Length: 117
Image (cartoon, rainbow, N blue to C red; front, side):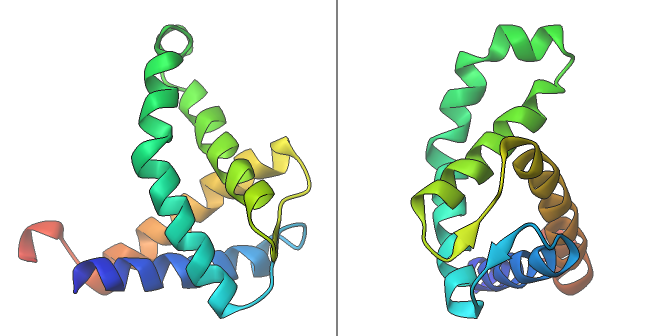
């Protein structure tokens, strides 16, 4: 049940992101659900591999390269899916940061602490 709630929160977060950043385009709620699902899969399967492969750079930048990896994952999903547009890589990095903050804040407010679940 919690997984479904997080999925819905992430979809709404994508819609809010598109509203806050006019350069990001999400066509509708159904598209946002699909994007949230694919973005979740990318974060589970591709992102850890990318973090492992870029570990030396990530260590040299004291973890700041993780923002680039997150932006790349966001941009990759936008490239794969129709109805979701991110105009450039810089926008993808900023959008990934804003999306993470919105999603974290909404999850914290609506779902509370993980230990309570």
